[in-house]
Image (cartoon, rainbow, N blue to C red; front, side, top):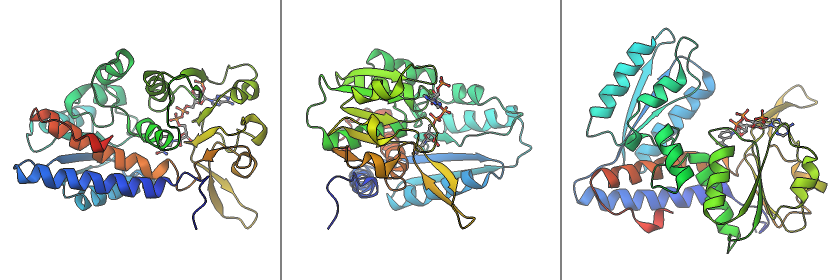
Length: 296
Ligand code: NDP
C-alpha cells in the first residue's frame, strides 16, 4: 500500500496528463488540435532527454508536437527568426525554447521574442508581470505543479504560513506569487536570509528550491508541515556512482512532515504535465474558448 505521507508526483502527473488528453480530445472534436513546438539548440545531454520526453508525452496526449533541433553553432538571429516563424504559425499554440542556450545566444532576448500568448514556460516578462499583478497569463510549469501538489494536501490555503527557499525567476519568485495569490502569508528566503532554520520552522508549507543537496534538515520542519522539494541534485555514492537527492534531507524531514514529496518522483514529473496543460490553455485562449476547470 502506498504511504499516505508521501506526495506521489508521478501519479499526480499521470492523472493530470489524462485530464489534458481528455481536454485535447474534446477540442479535437471541434477541429482544434493544440500544438507544442520545442526548440533545442546544441547537444546538451540533459536537454536532449527533456526534449525527447516532452515530444513523447505531447504525442501521448494527442497533441501536435513540433521539434526543432538546431546545431550548437546557431546564431541568435537565426534562432530569433525561427521563434518569429513559430509565433506566426496558427498550428503552434505553445513555444518552448529549451534552456540553457549556447553562450553566443542571450536567453532573455529569445524569451522576450516569444509571443506571450504562446509562452507556455511562463518566463516572458508580460507573463511574469501578469502573475505579479493578478492578471490572467501563463504560469511557469514547475511552481504551478508545486501548487497543485500543495492543494492536493492542504484544504484551505488562505492564511497559511508558507516559506519559499530560493528566489529565482523560474521557480522561487513565481512560487511565492502563486502562494500569495492563494492568500498565504509568504516568506521568501535566499542566500542572505538570517537564521534560515528558524524561518523555516514557522512555516506550515515549505517549498525548497535552492539547488543545494539536502540543505533543509529535519529539525527545520514544523510538526505536520507540507514539504515540497524542488531540488534536483546529483551526489556521489560510496560505490563510485551517483544518485539524485533533493534540497531536503528526506529521511530526517519525513518524521516531522505532514506530507512530503520524494526526489525523484515528486515535483519532477509535474513539470512536463503542466507544460502540456499550459499548451491546452494557450490553445483554448487563442480561440476564445473557456479553459476546462478540471485542468487546474
Ligand atoms: P537558482 O540557482 O537559479 O536559484 C537558487 C536560489 O536558492 C537562489 O535564489 C539562491 O539565493 C538560493 N540559495 C542558494 N543557496 C542558498 C542557501 N545556502 N541558503 C538560502 N538560499 C540559498 O536555482 P533554480 O531556482 O533554477 O533551481 C533550484 C533547484 O530546483 C535546483 O536544484 C534545480 O535543479 C531544481 N529545479 C527543478 C525543476 C523540476 O522540474 N523539478 C525545475 C527547475 C529547477 P540568492 O538569490 O541569494 O543567490
